Amino acid sequence: VGAGGAEIVSATEEFDVSFADRLPRPWFFSRVLPDAGDPAYQGIIGLQLFNLGRLDEAQTVLEGVLARMPGSEDAAAALARVYLGRGAASEAGRARAPCIDPARTPKYETYILAAQALRRAHRFEEAAAALERAVERYGINAALMNLMGECLAELGRVPEALAAFEKSLALSPDQPSVRAKIEELKKRK
Image (tube, rainbow, N blue to C red; front, top):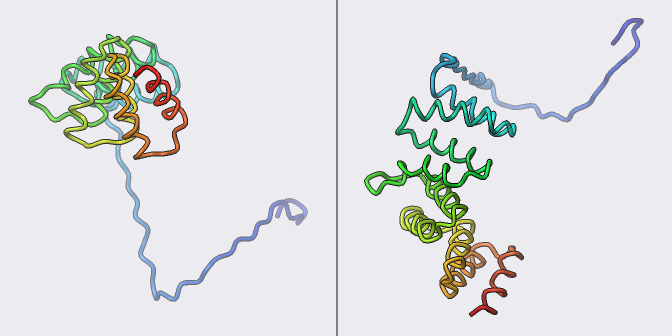
């Protein structure tokens, strides 16, 4: 009700009445942000800059984070995403290289980012090897099989590329672009 008693806004909403004799209080969770110089906080800032498309700023921030946390897989992944966004595949590969270590168990995303960087750098054999390690560790999904198919096709390994694309279609049938790639590869066979 506004000045002069006129109704300005009104709304209706359906609601239910609970027969419970009491309802639990809602939970609240609050976290104090770390010091602005904390590398974890800087990593969050770098990712936000990346998401905003401010790649130059994101690169500067995330390079600083990785320098302060050289073993951080998350920092390396964030920086690799920036490099890939800028078209700098070899830098993305270098950022991810320490994380693709047989002594470690990298995250699924680490394998995928490494394979994307290697593929863009035309290092298809290494990209396929990274994807094979991802399959061994985490199993398969359509996106991984599509990337594997792309790498194998670039290597001229047409029967293996076809098998990867067909497996992708078996997992996710609604992929017209993959169907087109299969038809194209069958002609090259």
